[in-house]
Structure formats: C-alpha cells, structure tokens
Length: 158
Image (cartoon, rainbow, N blue to C red):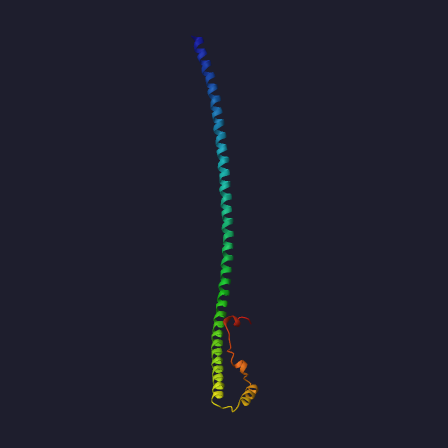
C-alpha cells in the first residue's frame, strides 16, 4: 500500500504541476486578453478624440461660413435698400415727366385747335398770307401736329 500511496502522492504532485501549468496558461491568456482589451479601449478613446476634434473643426468651419453668409446677406440687403430708394426717385421723376408731357401735349393740342379755328374763321384773308405766316411761325405745323411721345424705357437710356 505504500506504493499505492506513494503513487497517489506522485500522481497528486504531478497533477498539481499540470494544474499549475494550466493555471499559468489560463493566467497568461487572461493577462493577454486584458492587455488586448486595454489596447482596444485606448484605440477606441483615440478614435473618439479624433472624431471629436473633426467635429470641432467642422463647427469652426461652419461658423466661418455662417459669418460670411450673414455678411453677404447684410451687404445685399443694403444694396437692395439703395436700389429701392433709387427706384422710388426714378418713379417720382417718371411721374413728373409724364405730367409735364401731358401738359405739353395739351398745350400743343390747344395751339393746333386755335390755328385750325383761326383758319376756319377767316382770320387769314387768303391762302398766301396763311402759308407765309405758317412758314414764318416758330411753331412749324409739321411738328405741331406731332404729339410728344414718351415711355418709361426712354427714361432709363441716360
């Protein structure tokens, strides 16, 4: 039995060595896995930090673009205001010129009707006097019969 117990103690000590080796292998794997996890977590933190830095860069770039767009809008708004004010002045000038044109046309119409009435009422004794008077008149009949025409496009030529 001594041999048997000796064998069992040898077997027990051999089993302990195997257990120790298994434990060492398991510990080594566990240590490697922990090291791998640490490296993976470090890489993940680095990726997150890079992503955050990229986002901060995008925010900065977008703020610059936003500022440029706002500046452009302000300049365009100011230009629009200037053009609108100039448009109002031009409309007022056009109204004034239209009224003056209408007044001149009324004057011409009055002059034309008076000339025709004078000719029909026998103010001129004969055709010769009438034609000489009309030729010497500063209001040449060829132009008197022509109304003064204008439109808004003519105002913008100058």
